[in-house]
Image (cartoon, rainbow, N blue to C red; front, side, top):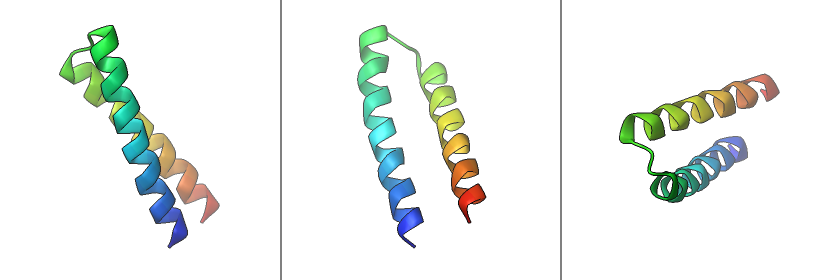
Length: 51
C-alpha cells in the first residue's frame, strides 16, 4: 500500500514541476501531456518490477 501512496506523491510532484517548467519554457499542452504520460509509464513500470 505504501508503494501506491509514494506513486501518487511522485505523480503530484512531477505534475507541479512540469507545470512550472512548461510555463518557463513555453511548452504547449500536447508536449506537457506527452512528457507527463511518459513519466507516469516509467514510474508504473518501476513500481511493477518491485512487486
